[in-house]
Amino acid sequence: PSTGGALLVVDRVRKTFGGLVAVNDVSFEVAAGEIVALIGPNGAGKSTTFNLVTGVLRATSGTIRFAGERIDTLRSREIVRRGIARTFQHVKLVPGMTVLENVTLGAHLRGSTGISRSIARLNAAEEGRLLAEAASQLRRVGLEQHMDDEAGSLALGQQRILEIARALCCDPVLLLLDEPAAGLRYQEKQRLGELLRRLKAEGMSILLVEHDMDFVMNLADRVVVMEFGTRIAHGLPREVQNDPAVLEAYLGG
Ligand code: ADP
Ligand code: MG
Image (cartoon, rainbow, N blue to C red; front, side, top):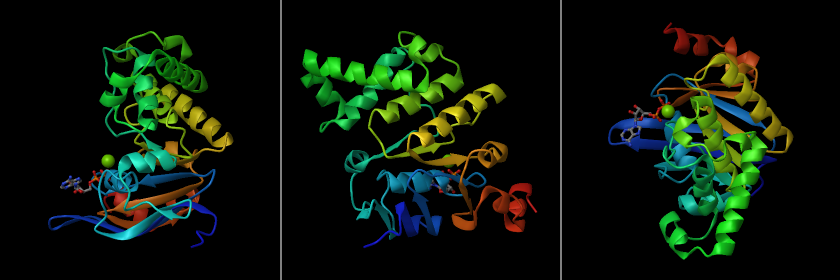
C-alpha cells in the first residue's frame, strides 16, 4: 500500500499496560529527510512510542509501517536491519571501555547475530572492519579526537553524541533519539543541534523526543505533541507552540 511519501507511518497505535493506556490510538508520520519532534510532559507516552516503533514493545492495536512495509510484527533486530536505529533516554554506555570500543558495540548490532555471539566468532578481518566503521562514524560526528578516551570520562553532551555515533553504525535511514538534549548545557545543545542538522542535510530522517521547547522549535520541521498517551496537537513548530491545548499541557493550565 502507498504511504504517500512518508517513510514512517504510525497509524492509530495503542499500548496498554494492564489498565493504563500509555499510548492511546496515536497516529503520525515521518517523511524522508525530515526532523520530527515528539514532545509532551512526563508520562505522555513518548518513550513507549519509541519502544513500539523499534520493536522493544508490541502494540496492543494499530499498525506501524516503514518504507511501505509493516514492521509492528517484527523483532527489534529485524527493524534495525531495515534501517531504524535509536538511542535511549538514559545513557547506555560502558564507562570503562573506550569511546571507540563503545561504538563498535553498535557496529555489532548490524550483523546477523547478537553482540556476545558475534564477539566470540569475530576473526581479525571482521574486527578490523568493525573498528574502521566505528572510527568513521566517530569522525562523522566530530568525536575522533576522543576515540581512545574512556567513555565515562566524556562530558554528558559528548556521551550523547557517542550514542548517536553508535546508532549510525547500524546504517540507519531513520534515527530515533530519546531526549538527546536532556541535561545538556547551552553550548552542548547548540553542538547537538548542529550535528542533527548536518545529518539531515546528508539525507537522514530523525524522530526525536524532547522536553526543551526552544531546542525543538529551532530544529524540527514538524512537531507532534502528546499528553496522557494521546496526541493533542501536531503541525509546524510555530503552530504547535501557540496551540492552547499545548500551552495548557505545559503550563498546567
Ligand atoms: P514519557 O516517555 O512520555 O515520559 P513513557 O512512555 O515512559 O512516557 O510512559 C507512559 C506511561 O506508561 C507512564 O504512565 C508510565 O508509567 C507507563 N509505563 C511505561 N512503561 C511501562 C511498563 N513497562 N509497564 C507499566 N507501565 C509503563
Ligand atoms: Mg520518556
